Amino acid sequence: MDASRIFARHVAGTGFDDLPAAAVEAVKTFALDSFGVAAAGSRGPFTTEWRRVLAGPPAEARVWATTDVLPAPAAAALNAYQLHNSEYDCVHEGAVVHTMAVLFPAAMAFAEREGGVSGRRLIEAVAVGSDVAAGLGLASKAGLRFFRPATAGTFGGTAACAKLAGLGEETVAHAFGIALGQVSGTMQAHGEGSPLLGMQVGFGARNAIAAVDMARAGLPGPQGSIEGEHGYLELIEGAHDIAPVLAGLGRVWRIAETAHKPWPSGRATHGVVEALLALRAEHGFGADDVADVLLSVTPLVEQLVGREVRGELAVNQARLSVRWTTARILLGSDLGHADFTPDALADRESQEFAGRVRVETDGNPDPNALAPVAVEIALKDGRRLARRVEDVPGGPARPLTRAQHLAKFRGNWAWAGLDAEAGEQLIDLVDRLESVTEVGQLAALTQPGDLSP
Image (cartoon, rainbow, N blue to C red; front, side, top):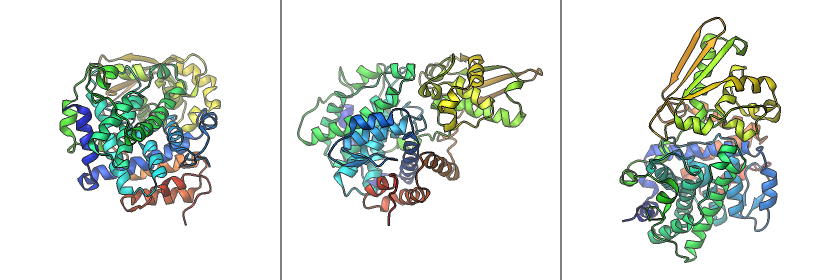
């Protein structure tokens, strides 16, 4: 049986009672995290311009952290872009897929348009959608050829919306086939640090809704969408092995393997960020004390965030530059949204320091490995400091505490300028998501001036 049919059976046949407690809690954790990150992302570049392009009737779903209500596919696209544009959204490290970036905005917009969607149904949708999106990434045995959060994410979003629509196995398989015809996501945007990078997950969210709408209307899709000669794995990934992923369906829940991001920069910078913050705290040195910085990273980290700094960077380039994040930390920052504002990016001292940071690869043979990484700092007084990070903070081996999780959400909520009381109400609703009868209540709280009674 083709993988598309096996995934379709998993999507159609999984119910809330099949989910272990860890998966349910992970859905709630990353749902709240996603609302907060997307709220902060409403201040990202080109959000206003894209809203103008997508604006129009009918009013079906809310754009988070704004007063806009747009057609569901448009709202899904904008919310997905806002969720990813600050590089602060959760990620499945083994799959190299931002698990919630496509599927959660797509599922929420679809749910608002449908109406009457309960929290239990949303949890089911997020869980199975995560299995599909992360599963496709885990099946790959090659380096990134396309932007996987958008490509694999489109299938995950399709799975989530198909679950909310109550589609049967055969219709889900058709939806996957229609999704294949809409998959897009170029790494050129990543290499250039273009805002299109985050917009591509928006395209995926929009296209996931379209795929489910078309399949529900009776339009057929190709049936070998994942393992076919010209299916997803051959076309997008190249070398692959999906058998272990399929064998784990219903036993291994990928949402519970998802990693929190403690800092608003590419996940591939985070091992270095932690090492630098720890060394600075332990030894009390400043930028003026530093003679040399050497970062030893995996080939994937070098590919994703090893970009050089020559003068001022665009915001998307800076978030994806381990040299920039290194400079900001050694100049005294703890790394937050303020390190990627126009004023910060124009700072000559940061630019000059970042230009001196050296990056080398460690030859790790795993094309999808983000760790280990090592930092070596030579001080002007002759001391040499070093730190190695094997497990990046925020991942399953080192999860954020609830206090850290909530602090991140509240910080993002405040950065977006949203009402603190609405934020606390959203925390409460997500905490008891399985008892919520209408998930549109969650979206309502993301809009300025919207407080539940």
